[in-house]
Length: 159
Image 1 (spheres, rainbow, N blue to C red):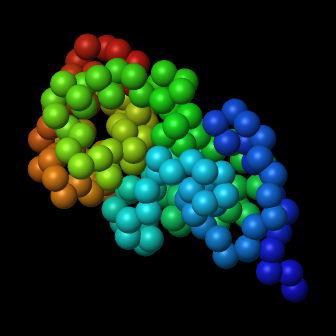
Image 2: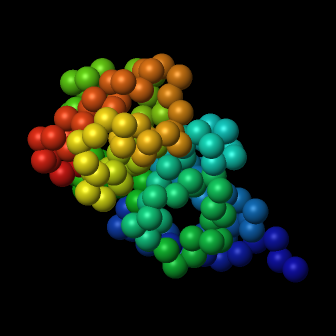
Image 3: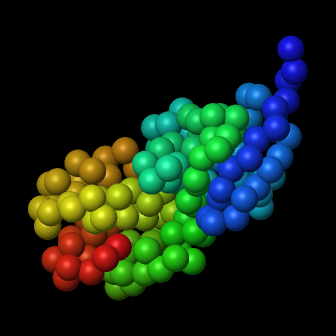
């Protein structure tokens, strides 16, 4: 049995092919093989949300998905969300509301917030809190993050 596998996936619009260990998780592949270090590795158990990315337009925890499971998939990282402009309104609101702090959780928090805004999330602070409850932040106390997401939904801006 082979301990590596050839994969091909589209990451931020670019087709990548690689031979990867079958047990390598997707976020490690993105960081170490693709050089996309925006997504962070926190708990490695899918609890903290620092590794949140999009796979085939679904928000997933990159530490819980193996790279081989992404074979043939379309992956969007925080770099791709920024390059496409999809995160621009949220980045501006996070900056305005001082929701960035140390920045470790920010990429995953933004990815989750984009899913909320683009998914038709409402301007209800409890609903926003519930949605981002899977993303840990040790610096902000969440209120500034909730306020920033609320601002974007209220303003009717795309993420």
